[in-house]
Image (tube, rainbow, N blue to C red):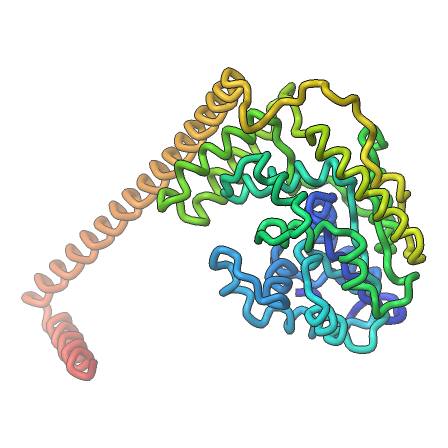
Length: 413
């Protein structure tokens, strides 16, 4: 744990709360902060975490969310985090994307828990034409089985009455998230980081994050293997079919996270090149473009600090009728190829685990042999003592004293 009594150079107390949104580079930023937290502390910047998911647990606790049983680990996590925030005399960064869904009452509790610090809220956002498909895919990676068109219908339903729609708009409706988190703050302390368009320099998003967090982007180590990669259409279709087969007691939560989400989705299927990407059909793209224009107008009128450009939130125009690949009816040959790669990855993992098992069994066997050898040596020593006691009075006296002492010890136990 970083010692809050030694925060580095003295600066005013400031708390930067990065509240999302999902699929906007949040996993990357959090991993950079986690890996560099010791270096940041020497500069007066605290990323208060002793485990990589500490802010996630704190967010679950703040909002009393159920999350596949993980919430049991989260009890009291927000208060512990807030205590470390209050104890630090420099800048503190808190970051997790599910904070975007916090209610106004939960936001008030969070801001009050930071004491008299100057609070800044940061939201990162990407255009809806990329966010909507990404959110459906994220649902699939969390073992959901709802089809793509059904997901789009739920999201675009004006009533927003389903649980799915409530969650989606809770974390993705940019003006509303910023209003809930920033209404009690001066507009200059509310920051919107826009995700650059495709084709922008690879490090541009990191540069934007670093500027709003007050960090030197070149002084940290932005390399990270903790990302949330996207999948192609056949890979996502395969994963949804896997979910349909393993969701009813076949795989428990931790096994699913390890073997399906991490091994298959992130480390195998996401690395397949050449697959068509998820896109919006023409009718939903037009809806997304219209809604985005409304958002841009609202955000421009509020005076927030925009890091990037509001134009980044406008979906790029696309030629209609170009025959998008439908993930509800994918190319079966492409799905089969993805399934083959998935089987190979699982076989490699089974082989690795079996090798580890053989090694551990070998170690257990070796320790057993050594234990038996030690027992044999001890037995031969005791037998030699008994034989010597028959010939030497002093040895006999010592042996008798040992047996009496052992007998007393046994009775007292």
